[in-house]
Image (tube, rainbow, N blue to C red; front, side, top):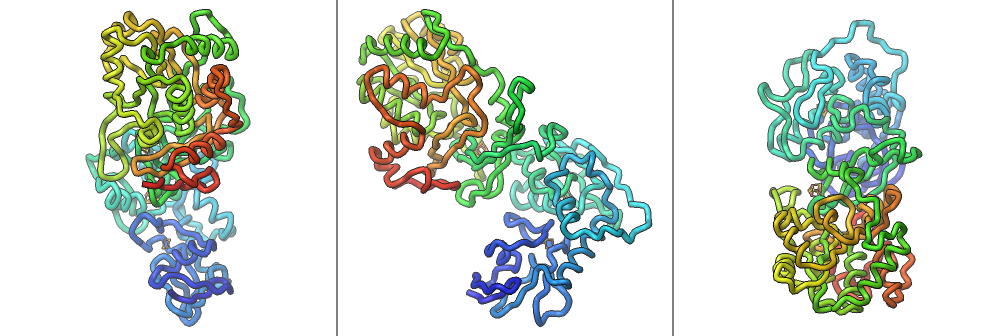
Length: 524
Ligand code: SF4
Ligand code: SF4
Ligand code: FES
């Protein structure tokens, strides 16, 4: 360990770390462009200047290691002057684009200019123009060459993280410019991350570009439901606008740092999957007696479930459900109604996998479903029984049987099974074929937890209100439980989770507070 002083305060930090790592560890402030904790050190932007006593001039904090007794100043007049001079050089050829630049509001050049800027510019010369302005460089990203400050973060991301070697810096001196290699496109499964790490508006995300000024965005921490990795994300939505003015409420997803899960990154498939939140949503209740409101629809459903033979009804649960919902489903269908046919695994829910983040299992909560339902039965086995006429009713959570087993199978099931109840979020042929349709809320509209592939239990949080006409599955299940004589007093999902933690050893001693923002790995 090394004893150092930063801005007059003593700290003990790990030996051998850089000054910028020490500054971040003690939560102090220092400007930076090229430094990114997930990439190698380039030391090329020079903005992170600090004064170190007994060293001449100033030094860059990202490429200088701490030493015992080091006295560091991040905001002395000498340090500030160096930071200002560097900033002035970086701005020498930067266009005055802020009013029309989509990065405004989250641009580090803009932010540091406000904080450290030399407002009385010394450059009279015309700015050197770089030619590529608003050019598409692949399916997801636009390049504005003249805004680039040549920090090389995007180059290092392609070289070190995706190993796709997309970007290079071409030319010399004031003609140096960032570009993709000739004949190459930025087209890899993690391309959206370069817009996140570009500190200025040189690389912007086509999907979000000009959609909304960032200061109108609200943000909520959550977890991507796209695969069993469970990348930590920030769900960013439009604040203070009623839904009817727009047909899209969530504006973008951004990765949230969790060193144990996704570090600083997320894949493109997960990033752009937010569109399903407001596309093709089920918003209308459907029942045989044409109930129009939740109260009568749930009473009608409960009356049917009360009469259902436990040997001839089956629950097709979903690994898209939260732990809380799976637990309520278990309490209701297995423990109370004594149904024996319970399954959650279906074909067609696996896909591409790599050795970085993307997992084969496209469900966020398969581990939770395994531990909570303790059912090994495959959905396919129940579908086979149903096809032979051995099942009278199916209660299906968010699963399209046509996609998993083909349209013909769904048609046969429709002929052989007397009643199909569907609880889900987005329209599909199974919902169309069901007798009862109960519209559920998507992950961004509710609270709960998912358990990822390695047993990490992580919270999802409500970013936006459930669409009118929909209810979170946990709420629907609690209401049904009450109507079926199971009194569960759980005002909110955190109380359901506490009960689950008492009952199921995998979740022992966990609660929402302990899960915090990064989750906890359950007991093996
Ligand atoms: S495009 Fe952005 S990330 Fe890439 S070198 Fe330029 S400023 Fe840095
Ligand atoms: S790797 Fe999986 S969890 Fe992570 S962003 Fe992609 S789909 Fe989502
Ligand atoms: S952040 Fe240190 S030189 Fe760029």
